[in-house]
Length: 82
Image 1 (cartoon, rainbow, N blue to C red):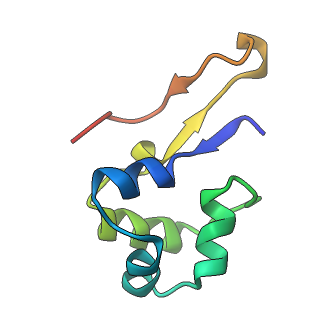
Image 2 (image 1 turned 30 degrees about the horizontal axis):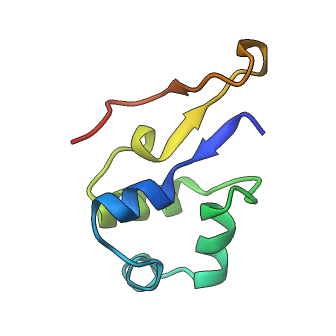
């Protein structure tokens, strides 16, 4: 899928565990794992907002778009590191 979720990167940058994020956001560890492992097909804006608030980041810090025409090169969408 051309949308890449960098939740694990942001968790590492913020030195936060999946368990801690799960508690702050109010979603199950299973659902966070699905998102983190790139298995999710969708995410609610309210969930994305809660994750961004907990990690003090922007949606573009969590999501990347990889065009299939670009031969697998990553295209960063967002403002980069904070």
